[in-house]
Image: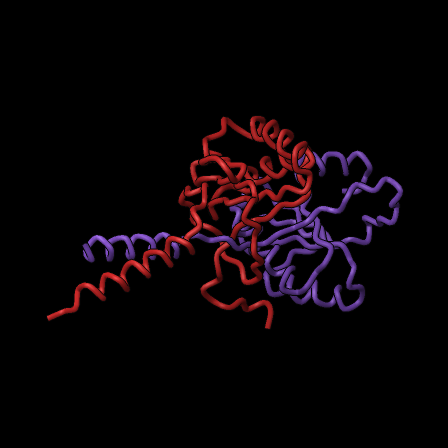
Length: 134
Length: 127
């Protein structure tokens, strides 16, 4: 006989634990991130710009769910609005590892020419160690 | 009821694991019009032509050679600026690889100009 009453006590305790520790990120676009060895933590309240492999740009200011942008021009506009409110706002670029660099470049351009100073590039941990640096 | 409970546990466990919140960050310097202490001709200029194909200060190099070159430059002058220019068709990860290498070598002064900035620099004869 399995003691179901005490087991469901433990189960609910675990549920509460995971509910509290899970922070739902508003940006849930699935992209294959590039790898890097050096990685620093990105702040929670950052705006996230996701660039998918097909070139679509998804954007969230960190509060509302991510929505699709028409292109870098619209990004320039929203960046301007955000920077006017919070000057030190962090912007995180979550780009697919295989997108041509010009996509990332136009996003960086839209961010920087509109006053974004704090920019991060999202990566995932490197599976193998680099040969260039010991 | 404990079935439902365990189902919920599994759900929260899976959603908790798959959120990546780490990456490389670069902070741009504050606008300071009085700061004229910029000597662009002394910067190391890396141009990424493709995966593992670099032209560094007009010399073609591989990833290993680039690491050694940057390391020796940093030993001479730790504040030396490094400019990374990436060609439009190069995949994004090739640029991240270089950026990661520079961060590993503890290069403080990495500059990644965008295309409008490169145009502006060209007007001043930097490139």
